[in-house]
Length: 117
Length: 117
Length: 117
Length: 117
Image (cartoon, rainbow over all chains, first blue to last red; front, side, top):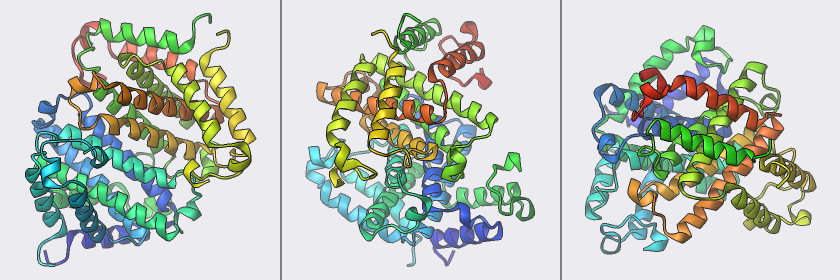
């Protein structure tokens, strides 16, 4: 693929909404709610599983989870688009912040939040 | 960019976790929780705003939201990686499902769920 | 009712779990996930509604929302129970904290968080 | 206590909002978002813990979690109030539904959803 996936999805979702005249529903507030609702559906798949079970999903659950993750990505890309936020740039920036907050030697093998390290 | 953003992030996050010996914490169950926690932080920025205000964020809020969206993307990419799910493929598949569920003529200007259209 | 609702529910949920040998599933971690999943389902009912529509739900939606709120309450009470937390006491304590954080004169008609007032 | 906790909280929260002229912010939509944001904060306390660790929180974490659970309860009670939903009644009704969905003999020791039992 020559175009970046995030760019392609952004364009596709914009067209999808425009064709259906959904722009009035796609306020940042509403899309943030939809994003969080989809993240909640991801969680529901895992809530009663042990950590070990969560890493060895039966094929049908894994397929269902894949589509839930897709839902999260779609709303995330759409929300970023209506806010005119460059997701890839923000992710790169956040990775750099995390690298500073979690220096390898201090964070090694520890799950504490950076302000507790 | 020659490599796709989602692929780059996947590789970067895998390295980030490996360098810090964080793999034992990165079970799908735990990452699903982290994903949903970050989505919750996105929502908190919008909860008291009117739809109109949500579409006209002050610059500092918009910057803060950009980094929260980045957090969602980072956990989403990492979760997909540990589950060996191809996010881009799943997103394309879900878009096709949505296009069938929400035919342009029936979904025009309506926010109902597909089973209510 | 002579017994407090929160106490009654706590006892009923404890019995419900015991009869079904569900205690091993009812770790605080799992119940926190379930709680958040149910809160996500509440959000989904409201995501495409205007604020005005959200205050004038059709009867069937209102009934469905009532049962989602019930789900949140049930998991909340159960989670507090397995953590041995007194919900009523904690709520009273949090109300007092909020009264200090949001003095009437300063918070009047404003939705900002207390550290921004 | 002679008055039921849920009734007391409902009245206290209604007064709290009225004194601060917060009713315009307290639409069901906004309160649903706040509820879900608080549930997300609960999850964040547990995301990197093993199930065993989640059942043996250090005292300061347990105190912090107690106040997060209180936040969830406060928004839940307030949301039910603005929707004119009787939480205690809905919880009783949902418990009855669950008892039918999860018969003791069939649900014993199993975490599957009722439609998979």
